Length: 498
Image (cartoon, rainbow, N blue to C red; front, top):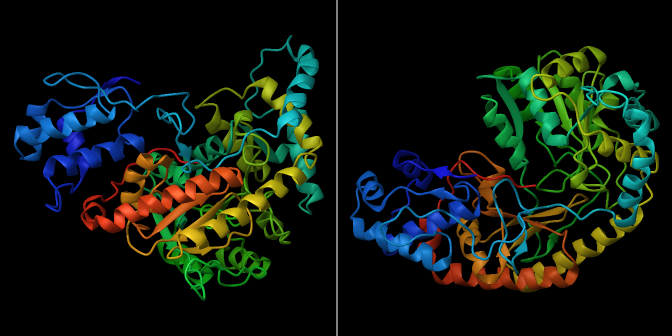
């Protein structure tokens, strides 16, 4: 996108940037660089003039001039002194990590927890979809509910999992994020409350905020401390420690949120899985509070420890479920769905038609093929993820023994507790060492989780070794420069993180 950022908006994004622990121009440049790298200031946007920003910040023009000069030297700002420079990323390549954000060549991306396509399986599904396409060409191509064969295939998977489901209970969407936006617009909306786990999935938090709803976070219990530094927390079968059900139910009863957005299956970012005992109790206690339970199951199939649980919808027909092929097969499919009772599906369809008129047809045909042979690529994918997980946990224990790691039961990420509140500062300096990160506060509200970092194990063991060594060196710089850690506080607005 292109445009300009006015001084008032710039000051709001910067927050309390000037703490006096380093030269003011350096503090200003560091925070602007973080905002650009994290997407909170989009690319190709003109920053305020030196004179205007200096006046708004109450600093000398020399300070802003020096900060802008530093950003130009690093490649984050174009144009010469005196002109309104535009934001950029050094050595930009193909954008891969969120709207308007590109990754410099040679940077390992640990901000994005996603996998490449399941190779030949996805390719074959698209090739076979083209065989089915001619039969649909005489139609208009608009279908706000989704192609019937795809809805039937999705319904059959729920039925096989012990939840009798018909195609009429399925709405096909353009991914899980699209599904959540439809649900929010239908069930919540302006000034209504939405309960979330804390921490939670950043893009869900962004969607709740964008809908005008009020986020109500309920903290998840802390993981048990490891016996020695850097060791992963042992994982037994799912127990009552993963979620604070008492707090969630009390919040529903007293604050009456319109809906609760939950990730009980290999929670993003912690990797926890909710036990059947907790699921059953949550559904039972939540009944009658007026809060609709909305469950994100996009990571459910990435079950690395073969944990046996039932989908939350098995305990109540009132549960609304979000599913997707993005994590199990490929995010490029942009195919997700909502499962709910027929009355709610009708309401979701009405909302959907105010947003778009239907999803892409070829992708739905390919998704139908993939769902009918769902497990074909999963064994190899799960084996790779198990290998990557063990590699990451071992590397963190060896090279960052002060990091306490919660061992994930499945999914794509490990949630690490840092020895100091340095998550945002690490995010700023890590690109200098070849790594891009998502700061811990991206996973919470109100600036929480500066003590935490989410680290995906989606890269190969060799790449993970390079990344962890880079994290070690970045951590060493932070430890040697505590003023940088104190200076950088994460603003509330942030870019998309998968």
